Image (cartoon, rainbow, N blue to C red; front, side, top):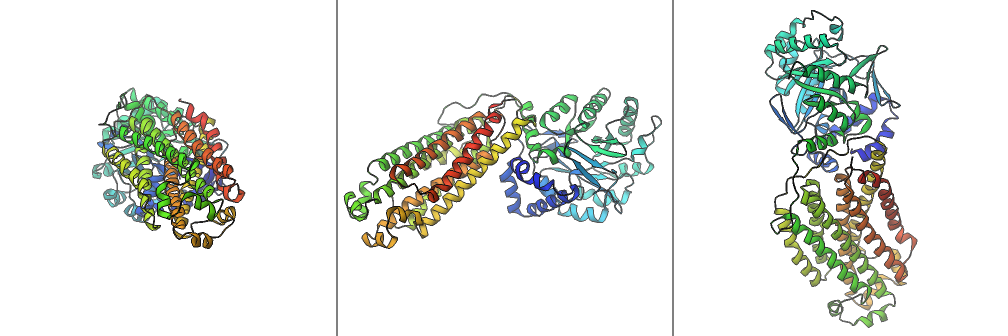
Length: 623
């Protein structure tokens, strides 16, 4: 559920349901999806949320891939942890847990006007029995699991859960903080701390007075706590509010602690990446995400990771043009596809057939016109659309190689690899049609080594300049809508390509094709027994190329949308313009302008245009 789908589709629907019901429904579905390897792969594919190498840190002796923690309130019933842990987080907080459980987990309301959650109490907890069963099934991957213990959780709870947890947080009784002096920790905490073989953090309110805060921190460290996690709830009119107002309190609390201690701190109140950067400047080791994820989307941890990675990365120059660099070979492959597409387009616009096509058919080009006066125009339209698709995908590959892979962008490398693999494999579709196109085979043989050498080269170290995409502003929201239209365009191209490739193996023609030529399949078959095979092989080439183009568009739209990445906009503009101009142009040139036949292209062009208009401010805004 990436941000583009969450903000534009799922959130408007889910927010019609009561908060607890919507939360548990969503997390339950995601948890079931993540319980299967294919489901986990789908989550990874859609979000591409693996943190950059420089986004992590050492914390509590752990080598975290990410400095982001998902707070326990995101999934208090522990239904979707296996999915949430794949959102690019370093720590997943589970719970709270007590011996017998306590009601209150579902006493929650949303205030969409202020992006705020409102709770009646903070004492709700899962029973030990329920928590154990869900922790056993929990797969957090590389993320660490912190289990939140209720204030009154006895030693029995700790001992039962210790083998399932990487560490613990303790939720103190909030009335415990009402006194300003001579605070004493609950007596049973000493037993918990002495029996715990894992790190234990104390949850701290963010409204403590300065002298009270120092007293609590120093005493907590003295009895064995390894650090602190800040609690993002503010008490207002007998309710607890979780909102962006917590950020200022959280940053102030971190700065105050840093005046007298270097203890480990997980800060709270993060709604956007720039909030996380502010807490980093204040001195926080990690940041906790809760309501920000609910109101602004599951892509928030990924955006925070990218911002932290930019802070922690040294500036490096991109790779230069060299045969030892993988991007060089892949860019040459892109040029090769563009050049091949130009040649196919030249043939389509002039002869429509090549001499070896005529040898295969056993008749001259002029005889094709005698079979059907519109047959050459039909072949011309097939071959120009194939050429347009080849030039489009070549443009995509060139941009991905030069602007993405050259700069160490792993997503661009994955996009190129997946799309080109489909494109090369689609060549084998020709074997289904009884016509071996030796020119297509020769082009594939020439270009395949470029692909093979390019993807086997080591990806360069990512190049960062400054943190981007750190604000949840109107430009970001419009960009998500534009991204939605580009994702829809990519999916449409994939479905169209698969349909055309499959259609070529079965029916070859759609009804509009035969209406345009005013003939039947049987008539064409009777005129020349090899003609259907020739047309089918063109369809398979077009279908395979369109499929691989759709994959490149889809993956670039899913993974490559980041504020200020203007080259992605130019890539999509040029590749899409080539495809639509030549495809629609040849149809009208030969007179094949059936509205029903061209309707998918019209819809695709509308989606493409909306994507360009709505995403441009976002992709051209660098900060």
